Amino acid sequence: MRVLIRYFFRGVRLVLAPVMIVSEKLTTPSAIERTPAEQARVDEACQRLALYQFKTCPFCIKVRKEIARLGLNIELRDTQQNPAHKQALVEGGGKPKVPCLYIHHEDGREEWLYESDDINRWLHQQFGA
Image (cartoon, rainbow, N blue to C red; front, side, top):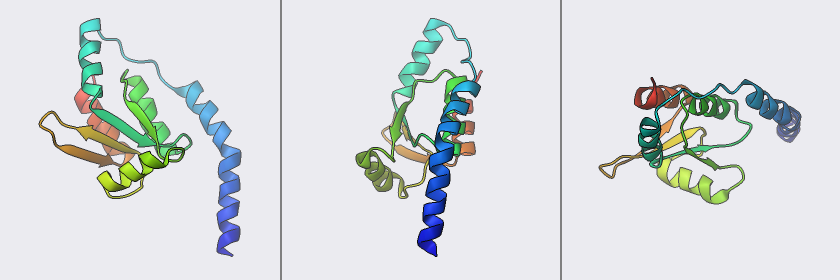
């Protein structure tokens, strides 16, 4: 019975994946406006960030929309397509859960922030208008 349920949900994901991807493209907001100097500062800060995610996760989509709205250039690391990213997430963050924002602080500390609402709140505090 477990196998049947697993295959059922995999089928549902396969059917819904294209819908979710198209929906994300159509509903992604425009980026906020910044001066070139401000955007350069933001881009420099974003070099210390990486989002562990996968394409069709609804919570990852929520975070990617906030990233787009804030005009951030954050590296996206797909844990579903790249086993090395998944392994790095498990070793660094302690669990294979996405979305997870990897933050390399200026003082050398590493932080692994889980939960889409917490990630969006942190991004807004750091880069919001």
